[in-house]
Length: 160
Image (tube, rainbow, N blue to C red; front, side):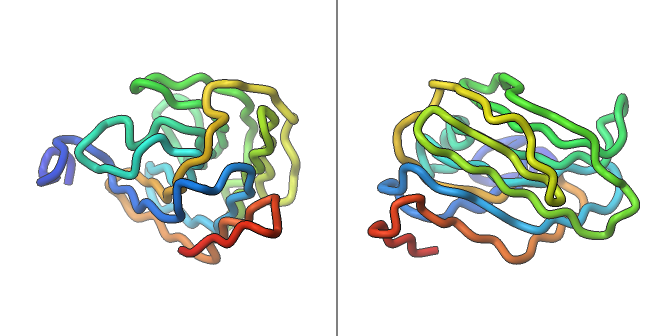
């Protein structure tokens, strides 16, 4: 319920994982949303601390069932100081029970893949340093499955 978070008022549910040494990597997860909701992944997070709103300064890929204006779409964005810069977006088939989200981060290059359809490869320099990953949702019912965080460099071990 919004506003009842003991760590940070009005902070949406978030699960942070990985380690701060993972630079270039691909995040993937299956998401199922019920009701007016969003869910997704973020990478290259600046800080894992939940007492700091910068916990979601990084790159994110969200699936939206509705935002009051638009139905069933995705957005990949750079989050910085509680503002979002949309890097790419597209529509999704709302009749599917589960959606597959994938976000590849390689240097300044990013690309989203949603339900097997690749988005644009974009260049952005907002977050080029290594960081943590997260699963995010709003206060409704969001289900996650098959989360993975795979580094581009096979020599890097990620423990989640």
